[in-house]
Image (cartoon, rainbow over all chains, first blue to last red; front, side, top):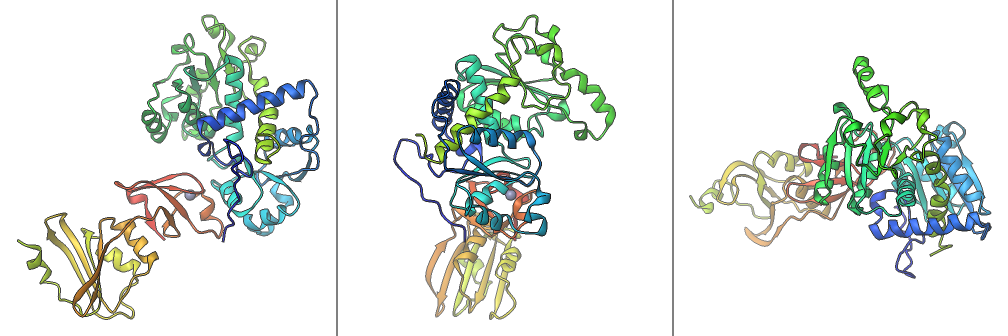
Length: 321
Length: 153
Ligand SMILES: [Zn+2]
């Protein structure tokens, strides 16, 4: 049987011992609470205050699928505040290669660690792990399903650049069909009454299920094929990669790939406050001449992963409220 | 055209269960869930009977048989309006309407080939998102199942 977790009821929010598996697990208020905690930690980091928040704690990073970027962000976030990190970066070196079940792996790891951050190629793996262990599990990506810390750092970045999230005009650009990141972000933004512009090639439109959710939540959105149609009104341009593998016909790919590249000369009539984001790594979706404009915040976005992941881990460990 | 008149076509049973209001052409699916035809007594299947409530329905009567909670849960997935009568000495002792469980555990298969439940030894689990039409969400991969996508284990 799967073990039940003990939940505490000490403050308004019950983050202690909570698993962060899916953005759907968090309410609007809980999301705001995480973002505020992250802002406090970012400030403390800058002033070198409270550098030992995670002292005596152990984070296990279980990466059943390689994702160097995400793993390094978790590890850096934890170690910078005095914590220790154990784990594996490649399933080849773990016992899972020998056929150990995920449940057995986390039941072993929970003997050595206080918290788990994991990535797995299969959908739902993080939920299974979370249900199997008494220590909190943070999902660092489970197949095509969820990657909630990415969504939270995206929201944090939006809030930091625009001062607020509610009522913003946000354009999601690129592969909206298969992109896990844009699905979770659209879901989260629907809690903040944002106006969404969904810009994609016709083959890679946002799935019906997500459009239905936006309808249910009364979100105003429109679908577009060209970035030019929305560039002058957008507050945020969230750009994602269009992968060649998504096209059965390579000619189709060649036709659309250039259409969704953001170049500096396209930004002439953009709002001065326009923020351009990208979950990285980028290939050629944003031309490098955009990097030096005030609009480019994708490297800050990656840096924001540190305070956001610190806030999430500190909250579920009960180290902050 | 009374219901009683139609009921007569199906022979009464002394002891056992009668499952009524099964959607048209679903009686054999229910029989399959209950693995009928092994040890039980007489099994009567009525298909495409005319009912004032459902237009056309199926009925199943099984002699010398009881139902477990897990079987009732399974029936509720494919026959959400079914009623079950428990019969003793030709009389209905108790009649209940099946109810969808809040959590559907180990009854339905997830149709997402990349779902962890398809790769590791773990019971499936679904949340009921909508009752009519039935919409289930996989507890693990969060994919929704609707209509024909809902397949019993
Ligand atoms: Zn599933």
